[in-house]
Amino acid sequence: MPSSPGAGVEPGPAARSDGIHPLVDALAERIRTCRDALPDLEPLGIDPALEAISGSLDGENLFIRNEVHRCRGLRKLHLETARLGAGLQILHCVYFPDAAYDLPVFGADIVAGRAGVSAAIVDLSPVAGRLPESIDRDLAALPRADFAEQRQLPPWGSIFSPHVLFVRPADAAEEQRFIEHVGAVLGVLAKAVAQGTAQGPGHPATVERWQGQLRYCKQQKQNDKTRRVLEKAFNPAWADQYIETLLFDDPPELCSAP
Image (cartoon, rainbow, N blue to C red; front, top):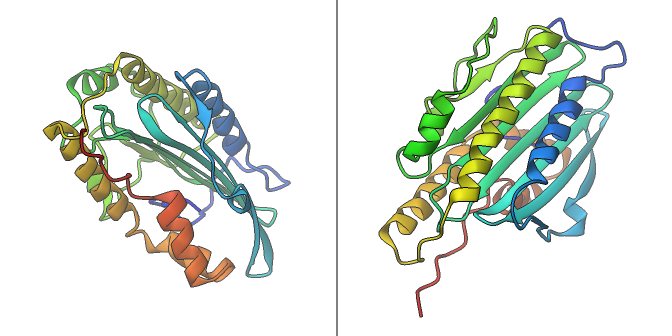
């Protein structure tokens, strides 16, 4: 389950009568399309038991699907989609950079239900104090889509960049704007990945980015809503393992140069 800032599903006008919200599927497809164009993309092996997960929460069936890849410059690209019963649906996507590259963390989350979308967020989050200048400039140049309702970041939201977009889409038009904005943000990241070059594991900038990614993961783990849901659907030990090894696993230790 995601570490989304907004976990409560509240009324909105963009619901479908069957309880299936189209934004989750549409955004997942846009993310996959952008992902598949990244250089040297390959699946990242995970425990097969974590690829498709079934559980039960408050008498409703819970299904979680995980897709995990890696590519040049990004150590893990994780796309999670989840559904509880016939209503609540969640999309959680995080791309963690290889610390050797000066790249941010990409994150996008959606929480949707029968009543509509309660939360939609996307950001390229810095891991070393601030975004690389070129990425900051490219994000600032993106058209800023208008949304009727901006949402407030949670207390642990200091990890996000000034360009974070956190909204409650009001209708289908705003949902499409959100999809287009996510695609544009992924385009900024793809450009940076294509132009990026690696620095050595002992380089001070690499060490700083590695430490920054540790802080990012620690901050994300402070969202207790995710842990409570997983503990209730499965058990505390499983929830801890899922969060620590799949959702927000720490970056691998830096190897010393030979």
